[in-house]
Length: 314
Image (cartoon, rainbow, N blue to C red):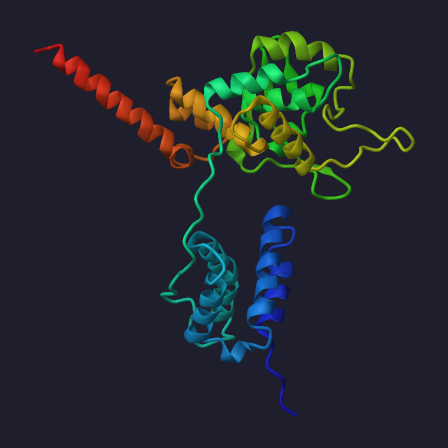
């Protein structure tokens, strides 16, 4: 009795669980599982022996009908890694990903993801910074440090050095898991110590100095069980969106505060190298690519200054 050919979707799922689970961050693994879900919708009956260049291109083309080109490229990287492994293991005779064409629907108009300096000042003035830790304090901290959400939510009193006025970022909190646990930062460059200003030192220090050194600052405990209550990024985003609307400013998310922090530093002339270190980017190139729109705008202003200076020489 001949052996039935394996389904591509089944092999891909097994490949994820063998080579990705436990080897990369959970959030990255989840993207592979999403790719698997799309595969089961696009080609549920495709067997490995039928996976050639035409079949692979058809998968990408089908996916591209409802996704932008960059998203299609990400999908190609995810499933393509598995397909190339199949080729190297001798399961298929040729590499179907060879010269794959990446298509996609036109990108949607990009929403502005950051606040201007005046808008940020309005937002900060609207914050209710009382005697207790709340989401407004969280907004202030992210706005003034540029930390990622998972980095800021993982902060404990031990991370603050009040003699040097610094905060150390050395971990993140996996809040997407129901049990919530500490894990490594996004990359090695994300482990960093950054300076904080007088407002955080003067007003925030008294709020946390009596907390246990390893206590999560922004995560409450259940009064009955003593366990940390689960938190959601969406709760903080909703709170920030409401604050933006009340202040009559551009509506952004928590991640938009990180962009705002970097944008304001760039506009004030801080070097991309210093900003990259403060944000925990793996390279200055990441900073330059992410904030190219601001760098271009500053370049135009510099050109005007240069021309003005040259005119004064004549």
